Length: 212
Image 1 (cartoon, helix red, strand yellow):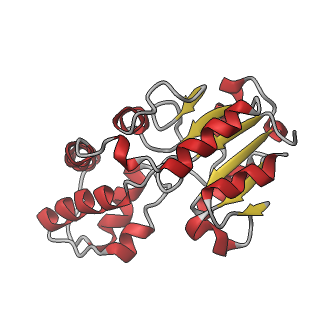
Image 2 (cartoon, one colour):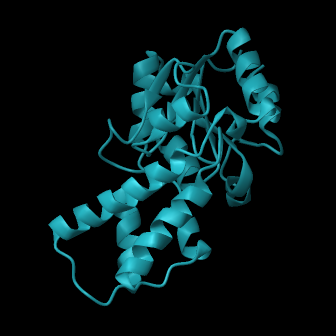
């Protein structure tokens, strides 16, 4: 086996919550009178909540105090969590679940490496609440991707050195974070086009060809 652990980004890899993020940020932007569309929303992928807010506020004509920014980010998250309540195990594809099971059967440790502070809640909603060996997320990091902190923490939680871990990501910032962490990476979705990953996946189950 090339690796002992696989670290997965959550949104866009294990499941998709992009639409819920978009609706929540759009609701906040509309309240602030700020233009917001899906192109701007795509810039927020893999970015922390407060860093995302700063991107949203690029089109804001007013001024916000740090306290007001915190309140705005919390309001967005409240809207987002309410929307996440619509998620269920139906949001987890058979292909993803079967691939995860096959990776586990090979003896690999599986972890989540996500900037989201809602990672555990999302996993619970889709039926994977207790599935992963370890979870590194927005509750235990201070720096967002492309900083490697979230992946280094995940490796630490798995008690593995970085070069024993493979990161699966759908965003360029995540691939850059994996590289900065000294880890190989498998790109899926939009991350494939950045050309920086060790492997490029067409489908999620292509991951099985990367680990043997």
